[in-house]
Image 1 (tube, rainbow over the protein chains, first blue to last red):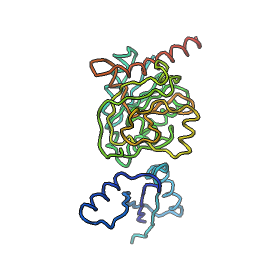
Image 2 (image 1 turned 180 degrees about the horizontal axis):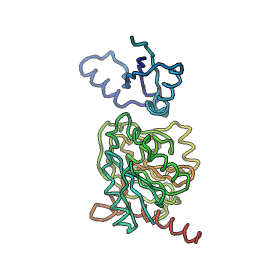
Image 3 (image 1 turned 45 degrees about the vertical axis):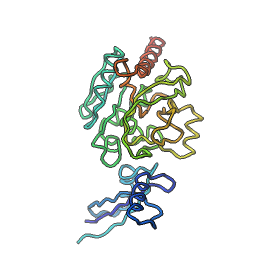
Image 4 (image 1 turned 180 degrees about the vertical axis):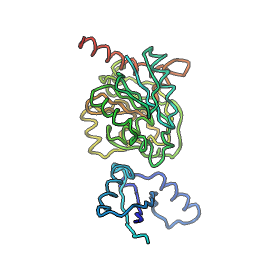
Length: 81
Length: 227
């Protein structure tokens, strides 16, 4: 078994109104040093071992987990003992 | 002419869409549950608004992987009119049938009110009963209707006359004030505003009815030619 951790973020250049709202809230809590916030998604997938796991996860991200028009993704694969 | 309204778990404008096609327009229409759907015998496909699969992951993303989608792709390929409203538009974007994606509204609020739309292209099978540049009143009801595409795609949409409707006063931050777009071939229209909620004066506007009449007129004309 492998644990795949997938991080999905809005592409640079795509405005993130949610991130902006979070930044404003941080500001009102007097964390004025925060200059930008981008909100993303994090997913954990437990996947059976296979030699093409990278390729498989890429396809999952391209087809469903992320929307390549507005989002970028990255992931890490860990062995589960 | 027979319309199919495809119902997904979480669709909630399906009956409005059915009412528009059946009662306001006076055509034949059926509600078809996405699992049992055989839509091959229908002349036009309507994808209603709502929150298919609770908007899990992204609006429209899960519905865009359901089995009925292959049949919808076939209808698109066959040149049948396919109209996606609100969540239906989001499904068409997630399917990649229409370019672009939806972001949360600029002000992050769910908005539900009438908007003025400008008919940018009155020559599509969905808009032929309108005048070019006519301003019509159609309600919106969405939290994620902020249409996004890159500048290259926007240029392409403009060059191919794929922008069917724009907002007179952009409520949600959509690029190019876009409210509705068609595919290149012109037989698929996706729009965030709800024409099916504006088909009789009792509802506050009947400006949406002509969209359905356009589909019917187009169908009659093509069938008269083929017959």
